[in-house]
Length: 319
Ligand code: 8YV
Image 1 (spheres, rainbow, N blue to C red):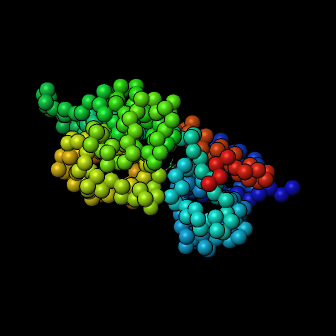
Image 2 (cartoon, rainbow, N blue to C red; image 1 turned 60 degrees about the horizontal axis):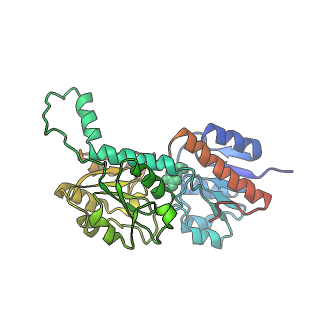
Image 3 (cartoon, rainbow, N blue to C red; image 1 turned 45 degrees about the vertical axis):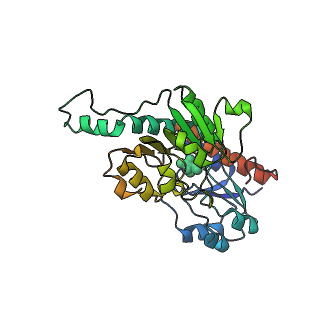
């Protein structure tokens, strides 16, 4: 029996690539470069399936040009804002993602950003590392205490809930906004807010965990930042599109925000060059899910979805 042809657009974990090569006629973009729109279109005529990352775009104009040979896009990501789902559905191309398996790794990075932003981690490291640490005082690099503080979570899906579990270890008072209220056994004492606007004034720390959709684009704008308590700390491990970056900078400059921790930017890779001059921004290059264990689990989950599809079953994460 001929094996389905699979294109893996980036260098996934070794275990994932081994399993893919064992079970599929696999082409791997081993130089790990970002594929152009034209390359994606050209490959769609050669393969039955693609495993892309969030970095490859399947926008409506590209989907229109895809070859009918392509049957499934098994994303190696939970976020699917790079895929125009209605356009793909209209073309009869199945789409899956990799939920659950990256929630803890991403929540760890949110915790790192929250702690690091609150306690001047980057600024402190730079000072010591540069050899310019020649002064100490009790009023030096005084930060904001996380333990016992009020945390606002926007988006209480899997990652939001994983972050809440970790924040409970810091005795934080947890508030959240979600489209719908969680059942009590998942809420575990967190206070539900039916609107973002009601959540913001009680969020000394605010962390975003929602998907990028037309409804959430620019969710954190100037009016919303102004509703946070003075000196709040803002964390984003979701998507850059949720944030008006000019408004974020303004909120940092005015002191409305004491600090921000960001793993996601409107422009990636690269980030926002105007952020570099701000010492109260702790930045990471979109590495929320980048642990060995999670990369293996994401790759395997994408392959599980493909296996089910080619067996004729419904993939677990079919969107
Ligand atoms: C990944 C992500 O780093 O899952 C997502 O939506 O943004 C990240 O986990 C990336 O997509 C890896 O392919």
